[in-house]
Image 1 (cartoon, helix red, strand yellow):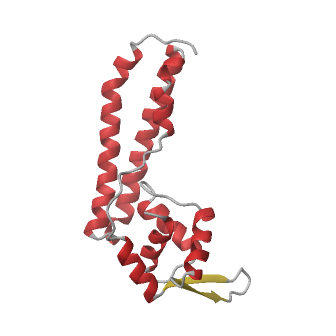
Image 2 (spheres, rainbow, N blue to C red):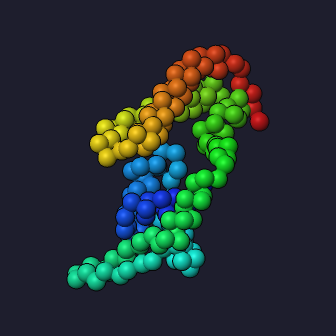
Image 3 (cartoon, rainbow, N blue to C red):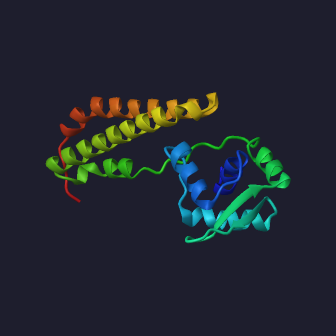
Length: 177
């Protein structure tokens, strides 16, 4: 699913500024789909050009004016159509897995540091996800709760898998590139 469709989904809940949309990405689906301001604002411009959103400038004294975006009926229809399309297989881009893939080119100490660093990162992500979930869970519907619990389960499974495999990986001899 593309950024434009997700923005339409967020706007279906009500008016939002670009900053609010970024916060929605970060605080609701950021563990499995995130977007930068550099992706959000061009998408908003395109959505406005297509007639899927309108914007209203709110004059504020002492600070920059606020732009609020609202989904149109055409935007609601487009969103409903997009979420009915077939599910595509996930595209996994993992810096961690690429570094582990080439782990044999490191010394045994570097391999150990890499694996321990990866494990620490996964544990931190799990801790952050659990804390965010606890803070936000009262606002979730059952589908949003499912996504958060799926993410937490995936992190717990990754940690367990890494803990099981680390010892055997570190027993392998290193080679230099």
